[in-house]
Image (cartoon, rainbow, N blue to C red; front, side, top):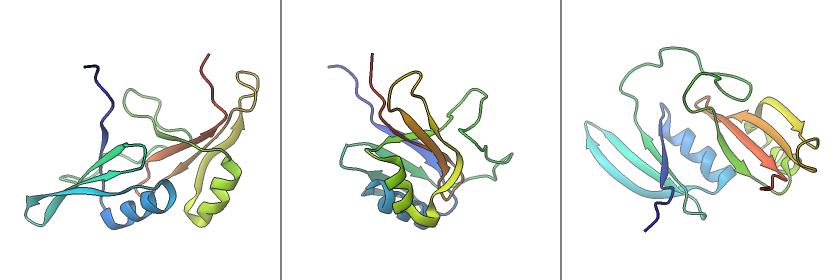
Length: 136
């Protein structure tokens, strides 16, 4: 059997705010909670595309500031991306929650109609919202 993508693991300081943001804007809901003891829990959020976010509580402070624009350019996770039909409509529907860090940018010279914007989630993680991407 071929492997399939299962989840992306994140560590967050404010689980209720993080969970509310992803539920409201990207359709995630709580699929499972595992008690880790000492009032800590591991939470799996899931959307209707069977994409999971595995959410851990922090065990230490962040060693440096979060990146801006389209995410860090050093090795590691750069950003999380979601595809939508209309970026402008999605950003408008997000209201003040859409804290844009870069864009929207058009990539018509690569793919006609490809447009992308980057923004921050409540934890400062960079999210890409894209429309119009197509494979070769």
